[in-house]
Length: 267
Image (cartoon, rainbow, N blue to C red; front, side, top):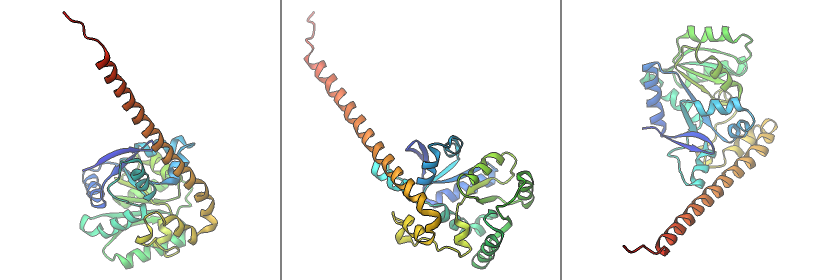
């Protein structure tokens, strides 16, 4: 079911959304700790200097591809099955929560934002089980872990921003009893109604523009640096890969030429 490939130095799972949900259900049933990460250009950019973040990305049990990695996979020649963004998976989990008996703990954002989000989710998904929630401005991580464990949730969604959300999950996963853990970045703002979710027809390469138009003050610098860096890395990888294949083919042809030109000893 799960085909994992290496892309730009990181593992990425080539799976469909339904396959991810199936794997999540199985992990909950077996209580197998599972860290889900949505990999994108920003995480690749930050991981170049942040070795802890890079290590967390490489060790995650499930790595789903944002569109940047889907595009990269096509350019390099190892196309991924499906684009599964973090907010897309979060919405799919909410849709599938009743059938699969999912229960959620939401951690992150400001108090008023997370309260609005919870109210909107309860209104939209009246069947959903929300085990608990807490804003992201807590001081004691151990106390926060205790509260999450007391909720008996089986899915923890953390919106502390990159890399704080990945750090929190990584550093506390052995103390947390919740089996499924995932960082969801700015998804809480969307579910709270502060930002609009990217329309499906813009998800194929233009999602970053839609997000930038909604929040230019916070995102312009990120996209100005991460996007060119990411494109450069993809093209460099493609060129190096093709050069390697060309060099290998040349070696093979040379070996064949030497083989056929070498006189055979007659007995």
